[in-house]
Image 1: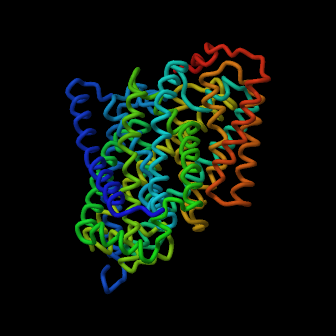
Image 2 (image 1 turned 120 degrees about the vertical axis):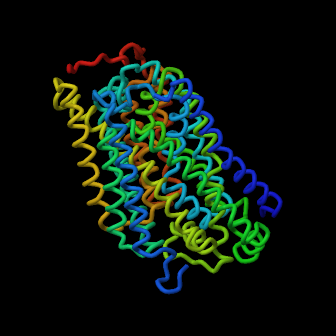
Image 3 (image 1 turned 90 degrees about the vertical axis):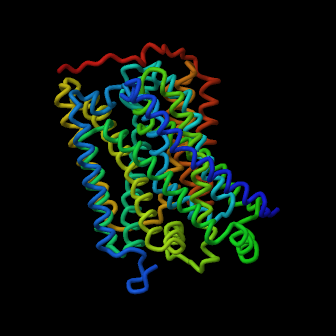
Length: 40
Length: 479
């Protein structure tokens, strides 16, 4: 059973978008911890 | 690739990037290390790491050279299941989240995973566990050191030995100065660099080559790579799940972090780290599927990712790949150096050789251990002995045998030390037989299955009722 173009494209694009969200989440969390002096 | 040299970067540019990054990380490590006053500060960052840094270090440490070099390699060999299977290693982080919270609760004064095995199961299991830990730690350290050399050589033509030596000196340098605090802080920055770099490379690849043409080329000339019923690849998928679980559940890299995170942070941090990590191997892996279309047939399969990126994006792409893989290597190498040196210092030196060692003494010995591990790794890396994937999967036979002893040890009072020791020893031996007789893609599966069967037997036959209080060991050393 072969993976079709639609499934292949969806898999790659969804993963790319999720990966792209990660820096925003990490920087947001860092700012929150930094402002509340909870980094360390 | 540049026509004159055949490499994407010149040797001098490659070396310049290494020197700039190296100096930056070492200075940063030294700056952070000024806050380390005790051995606990150095080894566990004062047990006070917040949520943001904790999540980033969980994710960045799991993004290793293997995610950036081996995920494309496995996609190149196993197609869709190669990259999806690799991404399932995120389960290791996600399932470790509840374990991390329990570890922190049961062992508020613990230092290492070895502490747990020693207190929970006794000496025989501890010896089996230490052998497994050392083999795994060295396999991973050597694979990371080798990856540094391979990366520099493939992208800039710089001699393998120079690249490998440079990455080791840099990571040993800043870990030596800053301890776990430096490791975690650099992990945060490295995590951002890795993710942004990977997204940029994949985005430009899609923009330049297009998903349609990559799919069409693979479907025509390499249809097995899109086959969802590719038997060896499906076996690899399950093997990789157990391998990932074994790596994380036993390794002091993850235990020391669980013990270093603030009170209730451990669960949330590992869960978020795993979720953020999950899509990354699919993004890095998919890059490899463009190789046949671009006419790239790498001399070593683990170089397929960097070569595709460098081919499509030219010099800028090569610089981005270089920085991404360099950051991925550093974020794992430093963690491994810190965690393994903690094991040597705490489990072997403090608990076996010098029980009366002072805090100052332990801090100094921990630093010597980091230096010693760096030198040993360098010696093992000198001959380029295996591809990264082969080296990595060999360790699967060892670590997968620890999954059930660790999990049952944390939640079940009944399993005794004898059964745990037998499960780890026989599981590892059978996993090695599977590795050599069948193939690398079954080593972890066999190892975990045998270990699970022995642990199951142990639960049925064992009569002991372990007292959880015994895990809360009080410190003996003095300042």
